[in-house]
Length: 78
Image 1 (cartoon, rainbow, N blue to C red):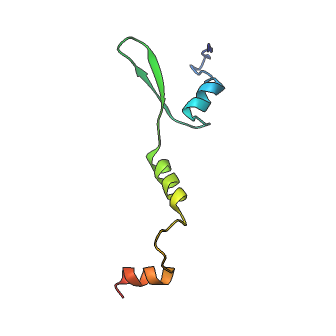
Image 2 (image 1 turned 135 degrees about the horizontal axis):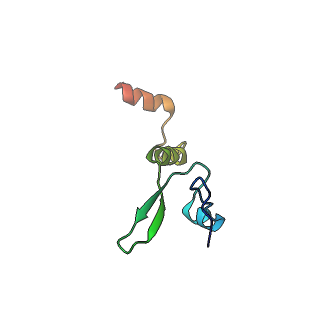
């Protein structure tokens, strides 16, 4: 997949590569030079965003069958 470097040193990452790596506008990437001289591009995963998505997936999925008032009473030591 050839691409061209602009005068500003920018390249367009082909859509198939962006899709494969899960890259979107504003995604951070790292370039790594391997021992054999090849360059590898890796997405940098943002931990805060990853944590937020975990909480978002778990939101509203408590497995304990208690009412909110009962849970609050337990946390208060009542």
